Image 1 (cartoon, one colour):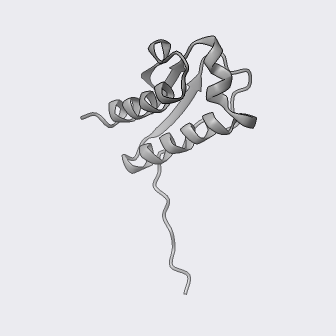
Image 2 (cartoon, helix red, strand yellow; image 1 turned 180 degrees about the horizontal axis):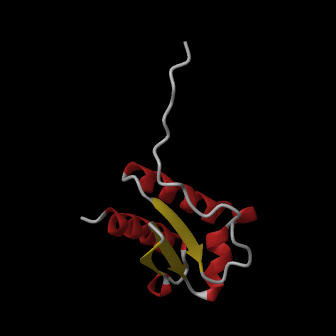
Image 3 (cartoon, rainbow, N blue to C red; image 1 turned 30 degrees about the vertical axis):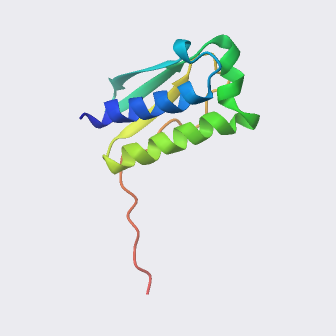
Length: 103
């Protein structure tokens, strides 16, 4: 399975679980500039519910997506249609975190 499709299914599972109208919630993905862009579309009534307090809900979804993409060594961007303010940093660089042993 394509890793992007797996991450898309994961995001859809989360948003359909949170949405009051799950039949109107879906995710599409496209590749732009060596990065996979996931666009989340939900009913207008569910946007605030998905955002959560101070944007923590959508931030958590973004962080989980970044972590899943890092495992497959590519960058992602998660967009929510209808979101008033986009985050400053959209995506991971696609590079793995290399930790050095400091002895």
